Amino acid sequence: MRTLRPALLLFNLTLAASLSAFTGADDIAGTCFNQDKDAKIEIAKCGDNYCGKIVWLKDPTYPAGSKLGTPGTPNLDNKNPDAARRKDPLVGLEIIKGFQFASGNVWKNGTIYDPDSGKTYSAKATLVSANQLDLRGFIGVSMSGRTEKWTRAN
Image 1 (cartoon, helix red, strand yellow):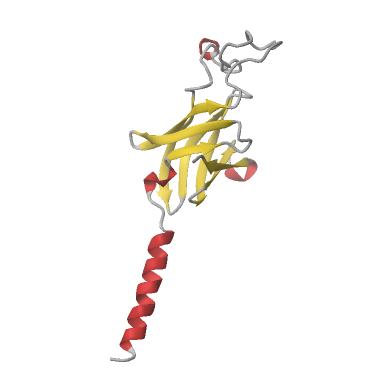
Image 2 (cartoon, rainbow, N blue to C red; image 1 turned 90 degrees about the horizontal axis):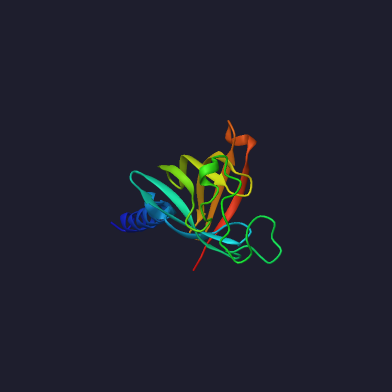
């Protein structure tokens, strides 16, 4: 009986550690700063997948002397390849689409739109910790892409 107690204690500690390391599908949800901390993106469940939209910009309007838009008016998605979408404000713009929970701490099969270039990339996300989300955008295979580190906005 005495050897059983330490074994049960060790089993319970191992089980607790492994359960705390498990990430649930909804753990990606929340608001994050992008890597440059000039935008906040809210990630939420959209049907069976996860999507994200810009909810805050450090500079939400065009500055004085801007050649991209009328100073004082909202920044627009002026590099969108779809001319009809170039008048959409950046705040409220959905830039993450279709992410599916894979397992553990990974979401895949999504896309991420870069309003600075007007390009959309295949993407996957990895929740590195409760406060850090790594987003990898790529064309073709993941190895040929770039990773941005997003942090939770409190």
